Image (tube, rainbow, N blue to C red; front, side, top):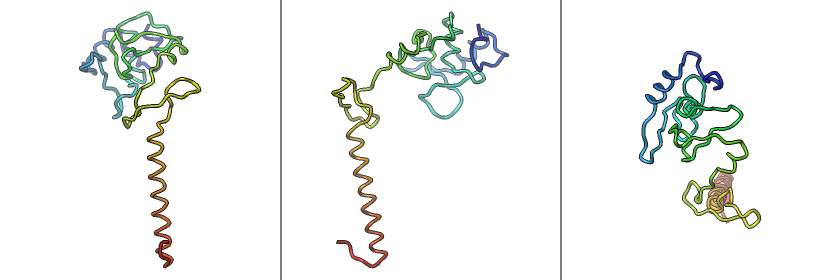
Length: 155
């Protein structure tokens, strides 16, 4: 069964992999079992035990019945969670449909609904407006510096 996991180191057995995953993980307040894999970045899928994805290895070891043609989906939405109750296998199409759109952008603005598709807009209009304003201010400062260099006064 472990041979079906891409990138998994060959020296692992099911018992040693289970112990290794549990030693590298901590329990979060929301019930997730968050694994600490390679790399400094949190909130991304974690590689562990060779070059294997930790959530796939956890599914094989804790749940069993792994089919490599399907994807392992997180019901909790935390990509580095290996809690067996939060993992299940879905087809690629079902996995894409299960993805939830967040109602707020990463800066905390409410997302607007796109009238054509009925889904939330991918880009936040408020963030885009603020970015454009910052760009205009930078361009105005560049023009003012260039005019000052040539001895012209700003009009």
